[in-house]
Image (cartoon, rainbow, N blue to C red; front, side, top):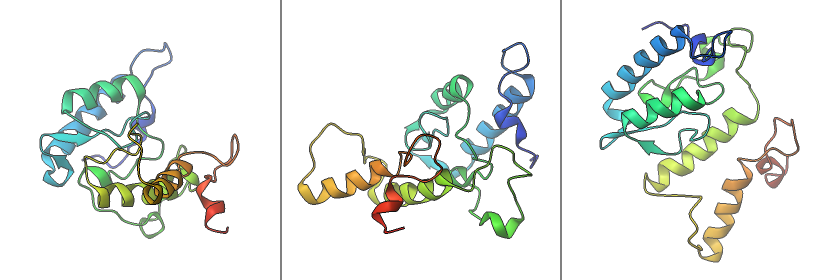
Length: 166
């Protein structure tokens, strides 16, 4: 498999159409994701599109459609939610210069925290549910939601970090 994943963020060509390199790379990603038992939830896989952000599970066709329409979540060069082992970026020598759209800020830290909660809660857990949780659970929901929001527009720090006393 090609380790150059710049194609993930070259979704459209200069004319505004889906690029051939993106479509080819997407096919490779889908084949990889479907072949990884660890990335499957029954017959569904996590959707790494910019809207679902690996928080929802869909069938392969829906995931592919979402990626064609929305593109990948920013900075998702290591497919750790789709069968690749997680390796700290520092240990593999990646830097923001090798991946121009990669951010060492809010997205990585919050995804790890959010993913930890989602892993512990299971695939049927929906933090965006309209059902009212008990008061103790509401505190967790509030922290989880704050981790998805910027401290202020353009800031790479989430609203969650001030809760930690940073």
